[in-house]
Length: 309
Ligand SMILES: [Cu+2]
Image (cartoon, rainbow, N blue to C red; front, top):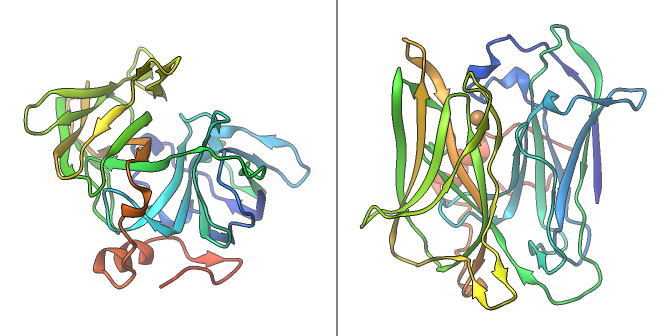
């Protein structure tokens, strides 16, 4: 499936976007709402921005592109799934052929971009292209769901936090309602990010750790991506996560300046999770306060009325 949306006028960002808070409304596109058009799961995603002549614009114009699945709950939080959330540091993703993210025909997806226009002038007539490959051959595949684990997930509010000078940590503890295996993980950190960790909250044991690629000033250029592979099916290297056990997600920063950077940090791990029992996946409660708050904070939808309020 390909979604092309636009034209959008994209104002110049102020040059302090390093310290963005992700909730500057002027920098967000509206939410493009589309029903999943096929019988078959999702096989990855590819993103690009173009000008009105069809010339591709620099990828870093897209600070974030988020796809919300209004028809499945997140595993950790009682709010709609983020099918993917792609930052400048995230490359396009093509899942291996044996894997898919299951979607049902008609599932309501909402896609929006947050811009980061560092050209110093407003760009007009910008088009956003989102390509979502799907599995249409009817073959049985391993089904994996996105999992999102944030150190500061204020539902409906900002997930950024202040960075004091020196080394600091932000963390959050949670339990999963369904056990399963973590197949792959990556994440998101801002500049001066040092690492992301997933820990057993009872023992403090580090389950997995992800490090950013940084330049010598501490700017985050990319995040490590880990795939916990099966080796010739002899070794199942997936990370087991148990239902009802306490886990902790930790983001570590080292701010080299002598000042606190307001809203300078964000830290979350995203991954692909294979539930032991997909039927036990918790249902989305659209009447819950968390759901209402989350949906109310999303950009206004265009292109349809498939968002369930
Ligand atoms: Cu961020």
